[in-house]
Structures are given as structure tokens and as C-alpha cells.
Length: 90
Image 1: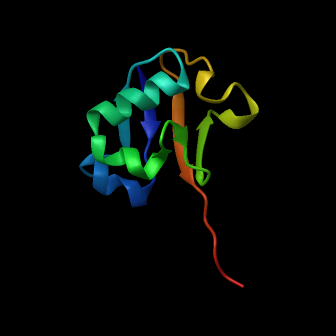
Image 2 (image 1 turned 45 degrees about the vertical axis):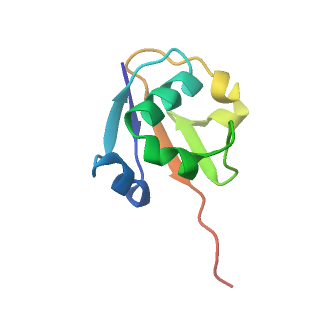
Image 3 (image 1 turned 120 degrees about the horizontal axis):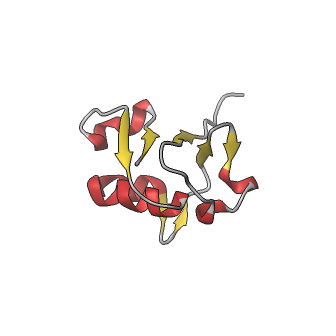
């Protein structure tokens, strides 16, 4: 089992949970388990079957985009973090 850390703006969709335990042997499988537990998160993370452009997922200190994306292997006990991009300002 692994843990996904949920950013504050998305916690409204996880019953206020800052961390959610998930199963899966890849990042994609773990995110699928997260969505199975909290279906209302799906439109905030995915556009169809693809992660939204502004959703960054880190395994440890590594952005999964620079590894194998959703196919990045996940060992039991590893932590994932969802970090939404921030835009705006001048």
C-alpha cells in the first residue's frame, strides 16, 4: 500500500483527507484506486484518460513525466504527491 498526498484545494473531494492510502504497482494504478475511492476527483485530475496538463504528480522528488509517466513503477510504501500548477499574476 502507498500513500497519495492531496493538495488543500482538492481535499474537499477526499472528505478532507490530506493523505489517502492506495494500492497499485504503477502510478496510474494508484491514481485509479484513488479515483475509485473518491470519484468526484476524476474531472479535477483527468481529461479523458490523460492527466490534465496542470496536474503534476511526484514520486518522491521526481516528476513522473520525466520517468515513465503513469506507467512509472510504484513500490509498496512509496509516497506520491499531487501538486497542481499555479498560474496568474503579472
